[in-house]
Length: 272
Image 1 (spheres, rainbow, N blue to C red):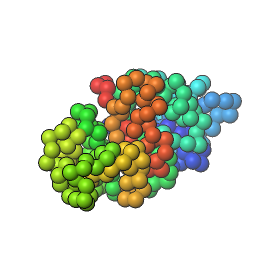
Image 2: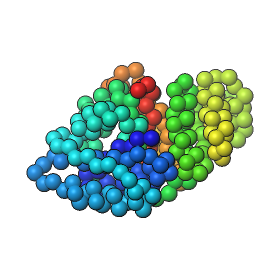
Image 3: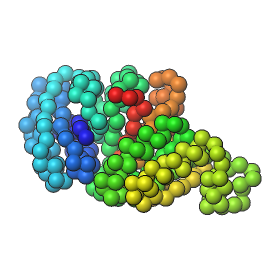
């Protein structure tokens, strides 16, 4: 696997480096550290050296470095696409270019058109023992689970497959959460099928798996589950609204990435 690990050299970006190095170490990935010089001050040597130390602590002793100039978000997108990386790792705040990446026009192009999976890291996370997989009932959910299972398997992590339903059907009220889940799993709806298929994928790989059902707004419930369960990684698919603009305004994955403190892996739907 080829991973592009982006760094601007800031203290807050260290969280992405540490967690990214952890993931890369488990996957035995081919890593490239990318730094984009946006002004006259070139700190690339320091940034590469510090990142190298972090990688070495996680067992990644061989890596490449790449320095580019100009607008960082644009350069990241171009380079990731040109070199056909499997995953790009970035920090979610404290980095000026990432704010443009998430909230500007660049984000629309990335999310809708580039097939690279994106791992967004916000807060410090030094372990990878619990992974939360979020299914939405789409056919694409299977691809997200398959890719995320590679990380969970390599790390020896436990997995939880979760689906969020907006409201509890009247016939299920009073059953309790476990009773509702049991009834839900008897259905043949796309959501139920996706949930069972996801669990089957993980269990076939020998990953200890739990299935959960929550009720409420999907983005809020995913964030709550991640915090309450002390998960180390959230895995989601990039399916969403029917247009780029609606994606930014209403997609569940976008809202989770924006607000969750847990690292989020967004698995892309495009074939590369």
